[in-house]
Length: 266
Image (cartoon, rainbow, N blue to C red):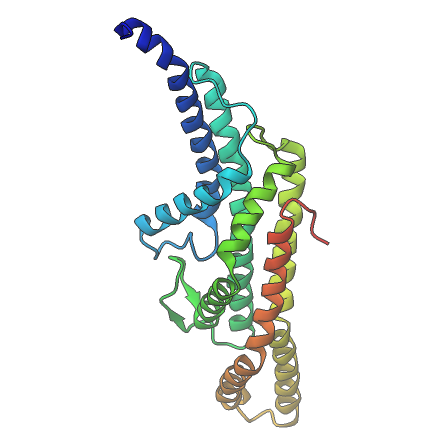
């Protein structure tokens, strides 16, 4: 029978390996958790915190075997561990913010559409704490439901795993490239929002031109009061007709972001 000292000495390498394994899993969880905190559907504040944590743990269990590092982190290297976790958190937050920009595009598109057809005063409870017009709430809820039905969780896990090819384990994105990448994707999100709201902008332009012509022909007529019910009804009809196409365009944009998040938008 081995003495206790020899037994502990024999188990010491196993303890170091176990600690390194746990730290590697923690580092993967940090990146995955940062993404999940901002991911559409999973990162909504109306979702219970326990469910968000469970989603992050489930995605970590899926992603970790695909990106497991060749060398485990040294538990005794405290500064190195701190740098590792900060780098993983930075990479995860960058990906999460990119995904959140797609939701912001829907919110902005709803606000532009509501402002252009004079229904911006109609607010309602939504998935986000920020007040939004009813059109924006409908776009956000519809977009998230469509993304979930299209397998967002599978695409998100694959996106996180592929992100380790561009930003390897334990390395942070370069500040200059990250700033350029963020500005480009922010501009693309605004462009997407304007493109989604384009039918409403066109209808608003035609409506105001018609209102101006009627007012010029009959100055005594209160055209604003006459046209208000018309533009409100037209906005609802246009929403019914244009909503499927708007969500389809948004779904394609989201799929492009998920397929290659580090690529500069075209």
